[in-house]
Each structure stands twice: as C-alpha cells, then as structure tokens.
Length: 447
Image (tube, rainbow, N blue to C red; front, side, top):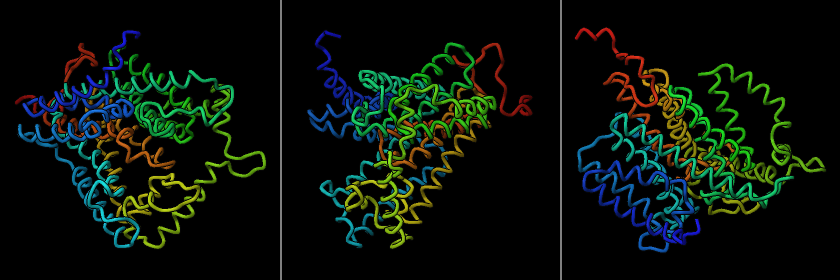
C-alpha cells in the first residue's frame, strides 16, 4: 500500500494472539476461535511470529486457552463417537512410537529434541482444534460465522497464491515456477487445501436462497478453481473431479452431463501448460517421468516394509527417519503411510474416522431443514471426499494448514446435527424469509 505499515502487521497479529488468550480466559473463548481461523492455513504469516517470545507456539497456545476457557464456563462437546475415535487414534499413535523405538526404528518419544515426538505433537493440534470448535460453537450464529471466516481465509489464500502464479509466464509447464503459496509447504499441499474448500463452498452454495450470498459462494468457487488450476497438481484435479461427481449424484444430476462434456473437451479449455502437466506421465522414450517413477519405487519399498510388520507397523513417524527412493521422507500416499507406520490397527482406526466424518456430513445434509445446515452438511461431505482423494497422492492429512479448518467445520457439523434435533429450522440472512419455518416434528405442534 506504500504506507510503510506492512512491516508491523506480523507484530500486531502476534499481539492479537495474546489479547485473545486473555479474552478466551475471561469468558469469550468463541472470539479466540474466530481470531485464529484465518491464521491456520496462512503459515507464511505465522512464520513471522518466530521473531517474538513463544511466537512459534502461538497457535497451539491459543487453541489450548480456548479449550480451557470453554471448560471453565462449563461448556461441553456435542455427543459423537468421532471424538472417541480421535482419542483412541491419538493414544494409539503415541504407543506406536514406542513400538518404533523397540524395533530400533526411532528414538524414544520423550521430548522436543525427538523428531517423532515433534511430529506427533504437531499432529495433535488437529483434534485440539476439533475439540475447541465442538466446545465453543453452541448456536446457529456461531456456525454461520465459522463458515464466513472459512470463506475469508480461502479468499486470502486464493488472492496471494494466484497473484504469485500469474506473475510468471506459463506458455509451457515449468516445475521450477510452481509456488507453495501462503501454506509454505509446497504447491501440492496448497492445491489440496484449495480443492477441499473450493468444493465445500460449491456444495454450500447449493442451498443459499439469497442471490447475493449464492453469487459470493460461486464467485469464491470460481476463483479457487482457477487458483487450483495454476498449482499444476494432478492429485488436486482428480480430487475436484471426484468430489464434483459426488455433488452431481447427491444434489444436481445435470452436473453429470457437464462433467461428461468437460472430460471430452478439457484440453481445449484449460491453458496449454495445464494440459502438458496432466499428460506428462511418460517421457519421450515411453518411460515414466521422474515423479511418477518415484511413487512406484516408494510404494514398492512401502509394501515390503508393511509385510514385515503388518499388524502394528514400523512405528508412527518412523518413515521420515529412514532411507528411501530418491531420498524422500514421505510415501506419497497417506493411506500407504498409515499402513506402513501403524499397521492394520492404525489403518482401521483411520478408516473408521473417515467414515464417521462422511456420515456426519451426510446426516446433516439429508435431515436438516435449515438451508445453512444443509449447505454445511453437503459442503463438509464433499470436502471430506476431496481430502480422501488428495491423500492418495501424498500426506495432506497431518498438515494443520490443509485440514485444520476442515476439523473446525467437522465440529460445526456435529453441533449442527445436535441443534437440528432440539430446535426447528431457523430463518437467517441466507433463507427465504417469505417462507415460514417448519417444525422438525409437525405432529407435536399442538403442544
């Protein structure tokens, strides 16, 4: 902006975290959750906090304070088996690290100097966000605000990432020009985030009544899809197509025709660099290109590792400590990584968790009468589908920047499922106020 004030933005944001810690402890933990949401995916901003005391831990501190503030006010999470599944999974992962220690695959997970313990600690921020959301989101207004803040966060990431991509020329695909965006980890991680929340707002917008709100949703979807296109992530492209197919089956069958036409004509629609990226699975000699061959080599090694310890695996967070093809530290498939590190036991727990997430979204989508809840249910279901597909191409699950907001939406969906059972559908800014609200139990109206 040319004012010279941009240098102070990280400091102001950092101080804002401490202010929100005080606010959360003195009776308004919901405001603390609101404040932290835009910072969850925006890693590049949080990295600036490292210059200040406890700056690298500010997100963790505020999440814990929000939970503590909520508990001090007597708040409770909505009843759901998904919380129990997360608790069992978290405990099992910690025990799994000790299995890795006993197998001599990793050091004892005792402190921050141990890489496996740090990985587990960072991973545990996801269930903490989930718990925090479940505790403080108690009414329709709070759930609506969470959706709005998710949209604002997505727009900020879109704006930054697309501006960086369009600052380069893309007459042909060039791997060196791909940018990690505000998430800071890599273009594929950025693309996974965009795919999840782009499809979320596509599903959410299906139920909005007011044209202005619907246009805002679809405008955000269009912007996000364009930004995703310029990440040149084939995994994200497939995640969008798969979740769009689910949207077509569940809500709008006309989309099946649109998807069919797109699959036959996409090369004439998208930029040449995108076409080049999608079709570059083989080189001029017919051999697999480098990234595809690396995945094949990694999966072959991973299969051998899994067969050596199929029940409990090699220990959580041990794959990163070993030597693998191309010196890579990830299996390039989260499901493969779960099976290798935590075995069949961990794989079953992970699958149960995913099924429960899908069920929570589907239940809300099918049973709710409030358009806000219907949109949240369908959007969350689609975002989870996109997340599942994206994780077939790498670990997109354990990064809080990618799935942190998804778990806040999960807490919103569980609370909405509870609210729709105890109160009639509410009329809000996105509903048609000319239509009277219908009771969830019309046969009880005489009472």
